[in-house]
Image (cartoon, each protein chain N blue to C red):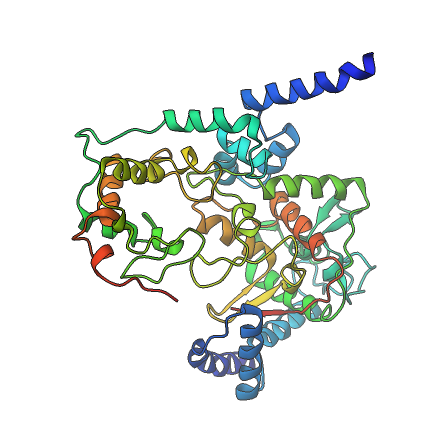
Length: 191
Length: 260
């Protein structure tokens, strides 16, 4: 009987530790990272629980943790103070097309200013979706915290990680959705 | 040295027009560029680094006025052929797993008497290029057998998948999940399955005119992703290099590499 219970106990323990976010960085790995110097280790050793989860499961979360993971990510999304999810598309254009800011063009096709990459899906003529509240909200939330929709994907969690302010994300939403935006009126540059 | 610089300037003059007419497969494209460059100038920039590295290796230098000829890269003192495909490995004299760069540094300290802060990165890179030239067309045979090597391999693998920083990045997010896709000019190489990837370092990058070892490559990956790079010669670099080089086991080395 003991042989029968042990595996069950093990599975239970693993699932519990997965949900409570057991750290990925073991003491041994911590020592290794510290040897890389202070600047390096300061950033790596601050690994958050959700980053640890994606690391442990090598970016493919198993079904039993997926639901709670997405729920946690959704809770972090914040909106602009004035509630407007579409800002100024001109400002959004600058963010989208600047390497050190949004850097969106590096991975997505769609910009008339830069040749797009193909790590992410093409966003060509994204504005065809219209500007309904649902489309605005979805677009805003994916940019704010993409892990709420695509757990562990490569895209930066712009709002969650403080790379862009909510108002700046709204500007990018406008660049993508506003029918007057160059993104929707001019042809996308492609390879 | 005068001849070296004259050659360097000649080669650079040929590099500029080469940036046009692209092939789609980056490895084929690099081969084409290499061939063109050789036809036009008769010498590759990487050969200049090899020559410079050989001078540094053979000349008696440092407080001890010694050359590096007695340095042991794992096959015994002075045995230099094919060593790049066997590194990183454990060395009994330092009781550490060392990669090509850190082993060169160790010998500069131990044989030549340099203090660690006196060691110039550019010299280590040139010497690495020289040693690389003696490993060209030889197989990658690296196999972690010592417990220290096995331990570091496992830590390197964990580090490869470790996501951190403001952009949630790890090596694997691009080099496993988005192999062949582009975010910028080059498609992401397949570090786990394409054995040609790890077996062409150290390499000359013709589009940037840079001589890089694997350590420079790793550090630049971190920096591009908005994270501070690990220090040169540090354990995280050696662990990642060990993990990646083992993935290239069995391949024939193309050294010094010539890449975009």
